[in-house]
Image 1 (cartoon, helix red, strand yellow):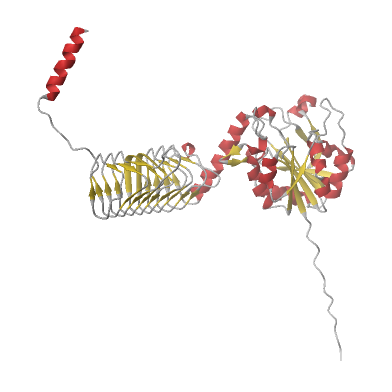
Image 2 (tube, helix red, strand yellow):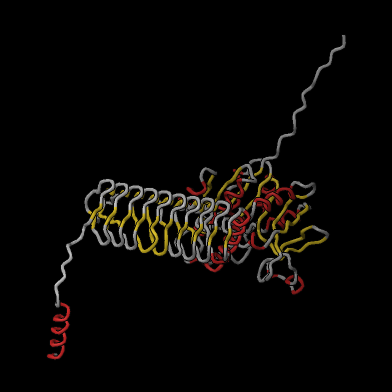
Length: 455
Protein backbone atom coordinates (compact mmCIF):
# COMPACT_ATOMS: atom_id res chain seq x y z
CA UNK A 1 0.00 0.00 0.00
CA UNK A 2 1.42 3.32 -1.05
CA UNK A 3 1.03 6.21 1.30
CA UNK A 4 1.55 9.88 0.56
CA UNK A 5 2.37 12.53 3.11
CA UNK A 6 1.17 16.06 2.32
CA UNK A 7 3.50 18.78 3.46
CA UNK A 8 1.73 22.06 4.15
CA UNK A 9 3.39 24.97 2.45
CA UNK A 10 2.71 28.24 4.21
CA UNK A 11 2.20 31.36 2.14
CA UNK A 12 4.86 34.00 2.50
CA UNK A 13 4.07 36.53 5.18
CA UNK A 14 2.63 39.76 3.88
CA UNK A 15 4.93 42.73 4.29
CA UNK A 16 3.63 45.14 6.90
CA UNK A 17 3.47 48.83 5.99
CA UNK A 18 3.62 51.82 8.32
CA UNK A 19 2.76 55.44 7.61
CA UNK A 20 4.47 58.04 9.78
CA UNK A 21 2.69 61.40 9.67
CA UNK A 22 4.65 64.45 10.76
CA UNK A 23 2.21 66.80 12.50
CA UNK A 24 4.31 68.78 14.96
CA UNK A 25 4.37 72.05 12.99
CA UNK A 26 3.19 75.17 14.79
CA UNK A 27 2.11 76.95 11.63
CA UNK A 28 4.00 80.17 12.29
CA UNK A 29 3.14 81.55 8.87
CA UNK A 30 -0.54 80.94 9.54
CA UNK A 31 -0.28 83.47 12.39
CA UNK A 32 -2.51 81.28 14.53
CA UNK A 33 -2.51 79.73 17.99
CA UNK A 34 -4.09 76.64 16.45
CA UNK A 35 -1.74 73.84 15.32
CA UNK A 36 -1.37 73.94 11.56
CA UNK A 37 -2.84 70.46 10.97
CA UNK A 38 -6.01 71.42 12.89
CA UNK A 39 -6.99 74.14 10.44
CA UNK A 40 -10.15 73.01 8.60
CA UNK A 41 -10.72 72.07 5.00
CA UNK A 42 -14.38 71.61 4.06
CA UNK A 43 -15.35 71.54 7.71
CA UNK A 44 -12.82 69.08 9.11
CA UNK A 45 -9.18 69.37 10.24
CA UNK A 46 -6.72 68.87 7.41
CA UNK A 47 -5.03 66.04 9.34
CA UNK A 48 -8.29 64.05 9.22
CA UNK A 49 -7.99 63.67 5.43
CA UNK A 50 -4.50 62.21 5.64
CA UNK A 51 -5.45 59.86 8.49
CA UNK A 52 -8.49 58.55 6.63
CA UNK A 53 -6.67 58.09 3.34
CA UNK A 54 -3.58 56.50 4.88
CA UNK A 55 -5.78 54.06 6.81
CA UNK A 56 -7.01 52.68 3.46
CA UNK A 57 -3.45 51.81 2.40
CA UNK A 58 -1.15 51.25 5.37
CA UNK A 59 -1.38 48.65 8.12
CA UNK A 60 -0.22 51.01 10.85
CA UNK A 61 -0.16 54.77 11.36
CA UNK A 62 2.11 56.70 13.71
CA UNK A 63 1.60 60.43 14.22
CA UNK A 64 4.41 62.71 15.40
CA UNK A 65 3.10 65.73 17.34
CA UNK A 66 4.72 68.59 19.20
CA UNK A 67 4.50 69.25 22.93
CA UNK A 68 1.18 70.61 24.21
CA UNK A 69 -0.70 69.35 21.17
CA UNK A 70 -3.36 67.36 23.00
CA UNK A 71 -5.98 68.25 20.41
CA UNK A 72 -3.85 66.81 17.61
CA UNK A 73 -3.16 63.67 19.65
CA UNK A 74 -6.88 63.26 20.33
CA UNK A 75 -7.66 63.58 16.60
CA UNK A 76 -4.99 60.97 15.80
CA UNK A 77 -6.50 58.39 18.18
CA UNK A 78 -6.57 55.42 18.13
CA UNK A 79 -3.32 55.55 16.15
CA UNK A 80 0.00 55.65 17.99
CA UNK A 81 1.30 59.12 18.84
CA UNK A 82 4.89 60.14 19.61
CA UNK A 83 6.05 63.58 20.73
CA UNK A 84 8.87 65.62 19.19
CA UNK A 85 9.90 67.67 22.19
CA UNK A 86 12.46 69.76 20.30
CA UNK A 87 11.58 70.88 16.79
CA UNK A 88 14.87 70.22 15.00
CA UNK A 89 13.58 69.59 11.49
CA UNK A 90 11.65 66.99 9.55
CA UNK A 91 14.42 64.39 9.73
CA UNK A 92 14.54 64.77 13.49
CA UNK A 93 10.74 64.45 13.65
CA UNK A 94 10.79 61.19 11.67
CA UNK A 95 13.56 59.90 13.91
CA UNK A 96 11.28 60.25 16.96
CA UNK A 97 9.06 57.55 15.44
CA UNK A 98 11.78 55.08 14.46
CA UNK A 99 11.06 52.82 17.43
CA UNK A 100 7.56 52.39 15.99
CA UNK A 101 8.72 51.58 12.45
CA UNK A 102 8.63 47.85 13.11
CA UNK A 103 9.52 45.68 10.14
CA UNK A 104 8.40 46.11 6.55
CA UNK A 105 7.97 49.35 4.64
CA UNK A 106 7.72 52.83 6.10
CA UNK A 107 6.39 55.95 4.38
CA UNK A 108 6.82 59.39 5.90
CA UNK A 109 4.01 61.84 5.12
CA UNK A 110 3.37 65.43 6.14
CA UNK A 111 0.28 66.52 8.06
CA UNK A 112 0.25 69.83 6.22
CA UNK A 113 0.19 68.01 2.88
CA UNK A 114 -3.24 66.44 3.39
CA UNK A 115 -4.67 65.91 -0.09
CA UNK A 116 -2.71 62.82 -1.17
CA UNK A 117 -5.23 60.23 -2.34
CA UNK A 118 -5.17 56.54 -1.43
CA UNK A 119 -4.36 55.77 -5.06
CA UNK A 120 -1.18 57.83 -4.95
CA UNK A 121 -0.19 56.29 -1.62
CA UNK A 122 -0.63 52.81 -3.11
CA UNK A 123 1.44 53.79 -6.14
CA UNK A 124 4.25 54.94 -3.81
CA UNK A 125 4.14 51.69 -1.85
CA UNK A 126 3.97 49.58 -5.03
CA UNK A 127 6.97 51.40 -6.48
CA UNK A 128 8.97 50.75 -3.33
CA UNK A 129 8.12 47.04 -3.60
CA UNK A 130 8.79 46.77 -7.32
CA UNK A 131 12.06 44.91 -7.52
CA UNK A 132 15.10 47.09 -7.22
CA UNK A 133 13.67 50.27 -5.64
CA UNK A 134 15.37 50.99 -2.35
CA UNK A 135 13.69 54.35 -1.85
CA UNK A 136 10.55 55.75 -3.50
CA UNK A 137 9.54 59.38 -3.35
CA UNK A 138 6.63 61.49 -4.54
CA UNK A 139 7.25 64.21 -7.11
CA UNK A 140 5.14 66.55 -9.22
CA UNK A 141 5.32 68.77 -12.26
CA UNK A 142 3.58 71.97 -11.10
CA UNK A 143 2.41 74.65 -13.48
CA UNK A 144 4.81 77.01 -11.74
CA UNK A 145 7.82 75.17 -10.28
CA UNK A 146 8.81 78.38 -8.50
CA UNK A 147 11.16 77.67 -5.61
CA UNK A 148 10.47 73.94 -5.19
CA UNK A 149 13.45 71.62 -4.88
CA UNK A 150 14.19 69.90 -8.19
CA UNK A 151 14.44 66.15 -8.72
CA UNK A 152 17.46 65.33 -10.85
CA UNK A 153 17.09 61.99 -12.65
CA UNK A 154 19.04 59.84 -15.07
CA UNK A 155 17.65 56.79 -16.88
CA UNK A 156 14.57 56.75 -14.63
CA UNK A 157 16.58 56.89 -11.41
CA UNK A 158 16.74 59.79 -9.00
CA UNK A 159 20.31 61.01 -8.67
CA UNK A 160 19.73 63.79 -6.18
CA UNK A 161 17.42 66.48 -4.88
CA UNK A 162 18.72 70.00 -5.36
CA UNK A 163 17.18 72.92 -3.51
CA UNK A 164 16.22 75.91 -5.64
CA UNK A 165 18.71 78.19 -3.90
CA UNK A 166 21.55 75.79 -4.71
CA UNK A 167 20.43 74.92 -8.25
CA UNK A 168 22.14 75.94 -11.44
CA UNK A 169 20.20 77.54 -14.27
CA UNK A 170 19.93 74.16 -16.01
CA UNK A 171 18.71 72.49 -12.81
CA UNK A 172 16.12 75.23 -12.23
CA UNK A 173 14.76 74.47 -15.71
CA UNK A 174 13.85 70.94 -14.54
CA UNK A 175 10.06 70.56 -14.24
CA UNK A 176 10.07 67.62 -11.82
CA UNK A 177 9.79 68.91 -8.24
CA UNK A 178 10.20 67.23 -4.88
CA UNK A 179 7.11 66.74 -2.70
CA UNK A 180 9.10 65.42 0.27
CA UNK A 181 7.21 62.15 0.83
CA UNK A 182 9.50 59.10 1.11
CA UNK A 183 9.01 55.34 1.38
CA UNK A 184 11.69 52.72 2.20
CA UNK A 185 12.33 49.52 4.07
CA UNK A 186 12.20 50.16 7.82
CA UNK A 187 15.75 49.02 8.51
CA UNK A 188 17.16 51.18 5.71
CA UNK A 189 15.08 54.15 6.79
CA UNK A 190 16.36 53.91 10.38
CA UNK A 191 19.97 53.77 9.23
CA UNK A 192 19.65 56.68 6.79
CA UNK A 193 17.84 58.85 9.33
CA UNK A 194 20.63 58.33 11.83
CA UNK A 195 23.26 59.18 9.21
CA UNK A 196 21.91 62.58 8.21
CA UNK A 197 23.44 65.63 9.84
CA UNK A 198 22.47 69.20 10.64
CA UNK A 199 25.32 71.08 9.03
CA UNK A 200 23.14 73.82 7.57
CA UNK A 201 22.18 77.40 8.32
CA UNK A 202 19.18 76.34 10.42
CA UNK A 203 21.00 73.62 12.32
CA UNK A 204 18.15 71.20 11.53
CA UNK A 205 17.91 67.62 10.30
CA UNK A 206 16.11 67.46 6.96
CA UNK A 207 14.21 64.39 5.83
CA UNK A 208 15.16 65.12 2.22
CA UNK A 209 18.79 64.31 3.04
CA UNK A 210 17.74 60.65 3.22
CA UNK A 211 17.74 60.65 -0.60
CA UNK A 212 21.47 61.39 -0.68
CA UNK A 213 22.13 58.65 1.88
CA UNK A 214 20.21 56.11 -0.23
CA UNK A 215 22.17 57.08 -3.36
CA UNK A 216 25.42 56.84 -1.42
CA UNK A 217 24.40 53.30 -0.44
CA UNK A 218 24.05 52.51 -4.16
CA UNK A 219 20.32 51.94 -3.68
CA UNK A 220 17.95 52.74 -6.53
CA UNK A 221 15.79 55.77 -5.88
CA UNK A 222 12.71 56.27 -8.05
CA UNK A 223 10.08 59.00 -8.23
CA UNK A 224 6.34 58.51 -8.44
CA UNK A 225 4.77 61.50 -10.18
CA UNK A 226 1.41 62.65 -8.78
CA UNK A 227 -0.88 65.61 -9.60
CA UNK A 228 0.09 68.97 -8.17
CA UNK A 229 -3.28 69.36 -6.43
CA UNK A 230 -2.54 66.28 -4.32
CA UNK A 231 0.90 67.38 -3.27
CA UNK A 232 0.44 71.04 -2.46
CA UNK A 233 1.65 71.90 1.03
CA UNK A 234 -0.22 74.29 3.30
CA UNK A 235 1.93 76.81 5.12
CA UNK A 236 -0.13 80.01 4.91
CA UNK A 237 -3.71 81.21 4.85
CA UNK A 238 -3.43 81.74 1.10
CA UNK A 239 -2.29 78.14 0.59
CA UNK A 240 -5.11 77.00 2.89
CA UNK A 241 -7.57 78.77 0.59
CA UNK A 242 -6.01 77.11 -2.47
CA UNK A 243 -6.33 73.69 -0.80
CA UNK A 244 -9.94 74.45 0.10
CA UNK A 245 -10.64 75.10 -3.57
CA UNK A 246 -9.12 71.72 -4.46
CA UNK A 247 -11.19 69.91 -1.83
CA UNK A 248 -14.39 71.65 -2.93
CA UNK A 249 -13.73 70.68 -6.55
CA UNK A 250 -13.34 67.02 -5.50
CA UNK A 251 -16.49 67.09 -3.37
CA UNK A 252 -18.57 68.74 -6.10
CA UNK A 253 -17.42 66.22 -8.65
CA UNK A 254 -18.21 63.35 -6.27
CA UNK A 255 -21.79 64.47 -5.60
CA UNK A 256 -22.44 65.11 -9.30
CA UNK A 257 -21.05 61.65 -10.10
CA UNK A 258 -23.45 60.34 -7.47
CA UNK A 259 -26.51 61.78 -9.19
CA UNK A 260 -26.91 65.30 -7.79
CA UNK A 261 -27.51 68.30 -10.05
CA UNK A 262 -25.43 71.35 -9.11
CA UNK A 263 -26.82 74.17 -11.22
CA UNK A 264 -23.72 76.32 -10.68
CA UNK A 265 -21.11 74.01 -9.13
CA UNK A 266 -18.46 76.62 -8.35
CA UNK A 267 -20.91 78.53 -6.13
CA UNK A 268 -21.89 75.56 -3.95
CA UNK A 269 -19.80 74.84 -0.85
CA UNK A 270 -19.87 71.38 0.71
CA UNK A 271 -18.51 69.79 3.85
CA UNK A 272 -16.49 66.61 3.86
CA UNK A 273 -19.45 64.74 5.38
CA UNK A 274 -22.25 66.24 3.25
CA UNK A 275 -24.57 63.54 1.91
CA UNK A 276 -26.62 64.40 -1.18
CA UNK A 277 -28.66 61.48 -2.44
CA UNK A 278 -29.39 60.90 -6.17
CA UNK A 279 -31.85 63.20 -7.91
CA UNK A 280 -31.31 66.07 -5.52
CA UNK A 281 -30.95 69.53 -7.04
CA UNK A 282 -28.84 72.33 -5.57
CA UNK A 283 -29.17 75.84 -6.95
CA UNK A 284 -26.48 78.55 -6.89
CA UNK A 285 -24.86 79.99 -3.77
CA UNK A 286 -25.79 77.27 -1.30
CA UNK A 287 -23.56 76.52 1.71
CA UNK A 288 -23.59 73.17 3.51
CA UNK A 289 -22.10 73.06 7.00
CA UNK A 290 -21.18 69.85 8.83
CA UNK A 291 -23.69 67.08 9.35
CA UNK A 292 -26.12 67.51 6.44
CA UNK A 293 -28.06 64.72 4.74
CA UNK A 294 -30.32 65.62 1.81
CA UNK A 295 -32.54 62.81 0.58
CA UNK A 296 -33.67 61.84 -2.89
CA UNK A 297 -35.69 64.37 -4.85
CA UNK A 298 -35.14 67.29 -2.50
CA UNK A 299 -34.37 70.68 -4.01
CA UNK A 300 -32.24 73.32 -2.32
CA UNK A 301 -32.85 76.78 -3.75
CA UNK A 302 -30.37 79.64 -4.01
CA UNK A 303 -28.66 81.37 -1.09
CA UNK A 304 -29.65 78.79 1.52
CA UNK A 305 -27.42 77.75 4.44
CA UNK A 306 -27.83 74.28 5.94
CA UNK A 307 -25.94 72.80 8.89
CA UNK A 308 -26.54 69.76 11.09
CA UNK A 309 -29.84 69.02 9.37
CA UNK A 310 -31.71 66.29 7.50
CA UNK A 311 -33.83 67.20 4.48
CA UNK A 312 -36.42 64.61 3.56
CA UNK A 313 -37.29 63.27 0.10
CA UNK A 314 -38.88 65.73 -2.32
CA UNK A 315 -38.66 68.58 0.20
CA UNK A 316 -38.16 72.17 -0.97
CA UNK A 317 -35.71 74.47 0.83
CA UNK A 318 -35.25 78.19 0.17
CA UNK A 319 -34.35 80.41 -1.46
CA UNK A 320 -32.70 82.28 1.41
CA UNK A 321 -33.52 79.60 3.99
CA UNK A 322 -31.42 78.70 7.01
CA UNK A 323 -31.52 75.25 8.58
CA UNK A 324 -29.58 75.12 11.84
CA UNK A 325 -28.39 72.05 13.80
CA UNK A 326 -31.04 69.59 14.91
CA UNK A 327 -33.45 70.37 12.09
CA UNK A 328 -35.31 67.55 10.38
CA UNK A 329 -37.46 68.45 7.40
CA UNK A 330 -39.93 65.77 6.38
CA UNK A 331 -40.88 64.43 2.98
CA UNK A 332 -42.40 67.05 0.63
CA UNK A 333 -42.17 69.68 3.36
CA UNK A 334 -41.38 73.26 2.46
CA UNK A 335 -39.04 75.75 4.12
CA UNK A 336 -39.28 78.96 2.15
CA UNK A 337 -37.52 82.28 1.82
CA UNK A 338 -36.22 83.98 4.95
CA UNK A 339 -37.26 81.07 7.17
CA UNK A 340 -34.93 79.88 9.91
CA UNK A 341 -35.44 76.64 11.80
CA UNK A 342 -33.34 75.21 14.62
CA UNK A 343 -33.75 71.95 16.57
CA UNK A 344 -37.10 71.59 14.84
CA UNK A 345 -38.87 68.67 13.21
CA UNK A 346 -41.09 69.62 10.29
CA UNK A 347 -43.51 66.84 9.47
CA UNK A 348 -44.25 65.48 6.02
CA UNK A 349 -45.91 68.06 3.80
CA UNK A 350 -45.70 70.81 6.40
CA UNK A 351 -45.02 74.33 5.13
CA UNK A 352 -43.23 77.38 6.49
CA UNK A 353 -43.12 79.44 3.35
CA UNK A 354 -41.67 82.78 4.43
CA UNK A 355 -40.41 85.11 7.14
CA UNK A 356 -40.61 82.65 10.03
CA UNK A 357 -38.49 81.42 12.95
CA UNK A 358 -39.10 77.95 14.37
CA UNK A 359 -36.82 76.96 17.24
CA UNK A 360 -37.10 73.86 19.45
CA UNK A 361 -40.37 72.93 17.80
CA UNK A 362 -42.23 69.92 16.49
CA UNK A 363 -44.56 70.64 13.57
CA UNK A 364 -46.99 67.95 12.53
CA UNK A 365 -47.57 66.73 9.00
CA UNK A 366 -49.51 69.01 6.71
CA UNK A 367 -49.36 71.99 9.07
CA UNK A 368 -49.10 75.46 7.54
CA UNK A 369 -47.04 78.13 9.29
CA UNK A 370 -48.02 81.64 8.22
CA UNK A 371 -45.61 84.45 7.42
CA UNK A 372 -43.99 86.17 10.39
CA UNK A 373 -44.63 83.35 12.86
CA UNK A 374 -42.19 83.10 15.77
CA UNK A 375 -41.73 80.41 18.37
CA UNK A 376 -40.43 82.12 21.51
CA UNK A 377 -38.30 79.23 22.75
CA UNK A 378 -35.78 80.93 25.06
CA UNK A 379 -36.57 82.63 28.36
CA UNK A 380 -33.03 83.82 28.97
CA UNK A 381 -32.03 80.70 30.89
CA UNK A 382 -33.75 77.65 29.43
CA UNK A 383 -34.94 76.51 25.99
CA UNK A 384 -38.58 75.36 25.79
CA UNK A 385 -40.42 73.38 23.14
CA UNK A 386 -43.40 74.24 20.99
CA UNK A 387 -45.63 71.49 19.60
CA UNK A 388 -47.87 72.14 16.61
CA UNK A 389 -50.21 69.33 15.63
CA UNK A 390 -50.87 67.85 12.22
CA UNK A 391 -52.99 69.90 9.84
CA UNK A 392 -52.92 73.05 11.96
CA UNK A 393 -52.99 76.48 10.35
CA UNK A 394 -50.91 79.07 12.16
CA UNK A 395 -51.99 82.54 11.07
CA UNK A 396 -49.50 85.17 9.96
CA UNK A 397 -47.64 87.06 12.69
CA UNK A 398 -48.53 84.52 15.35
CA UNK A 399 -46.22 84.39 18.37
CA UNK A 400 -46.12 81.02 20.15
CA UNK A 401 -44.66 81.41 23.63
CA UNK A 402 -43.08 78.12 24.71
CA UNK A 403 -43.64 75.82 26.39
CA UNK A 404 -46.92 75.49 24.55
CA UNK A 405 -48.85 72.81 22.69
CA UNK A 406 -51.07 73.62 19.73
CA UNK A 407 -53.22 70.60 18.90
CA UNK A 408 -54.07 69.04 15.56
CA UNK A 409 -56.36 70.88 13.17
CA UNK A 410 -56.01 74.14 15.10
CA UNK A 411 -56.35 77.60 13.54
CA UNK A 412 -54.67 80.56 15.19
CA UNK A 413 -55.91 83.98 14.17
CA UNK A 414 -53.36 86.22 12.49
CA UNK A 415 -51.47 88.43 14.91
CA UNK A 416 -52.20 86.23 17.92
CA UNK A 417 -49.92 85.70 20.89
CA UNK A 418 -50.45 82.12 22.06
CA UNK A 419 -49.38 81.50 25.65
CA UNK A 420 -51.60 78.54 26.60
CA UNK A 421 -52.18 75.12 25.09
CA UNK A 422 -54.80 74.92 22.35
CA UNK A 423 -56.93 71.75 22.05
CA UNK A 424 -57.45 69.89 18.80
CA UNK A 425 -59.66 71.58 16.18
CA UNK A 426 -60.00 74.79 18.19
CA UNK A 427 -59.50 78.34 16.93
CA UNK A 428 -57.18 80.43 19.11
CA UNK A 429 -57.42 84.20 19.15
CA UNK A 430 -54.85 85.90 21.32
CA UNK A 431 -55.06 89.61 20.54
CA UNK A 432 -56.71 92.74 21.89
CA UNK A 433 -60.19 93.59 20.64
CA UNK A 434 -60.11 96.18 17.85
CA UNK A 435 -61.77 99.51 18.46
CA UNK A 436 -62.47 102.06 15.68
CA UNK A 437 -62.70 105.68 16.84
CA UNK A 438 -64.43 107.76 14.17
CA UNK A 439 -62.58 110.92 13.09
CA UNK A 440 -59.65 110.39 15.47
CA UNK A 441 -57.10 110.04 12.67
CA UNK A 442 -57.97 113.44 11.21
CA UNK A 443 -57.90 115.18 14.61
CA UNK A 444 -54.58 113.50 15.42
CA UNK A 445 -53.02 114.85 12.22
CA UNK A 446 -54.37 118.34 12.99
CA UNK A 447 -52.79 118.31 16.47
CA UNK A 448 -49.45 117.29 14.95
CA UNK A 449 -49.67 120.11 12.39
CA UNK A 450 -50.39 122.72 15.08
CA UNK A 451 -47.52 121.49 17.24
CA UNK A 452 -45.11 121.74 14.32
CA UNK A 453 -46.22 125.32 13.51
CA UNK A 454 -45.65 126.40 17.14
CA UNK A 455 -42.10 125.05 16.77
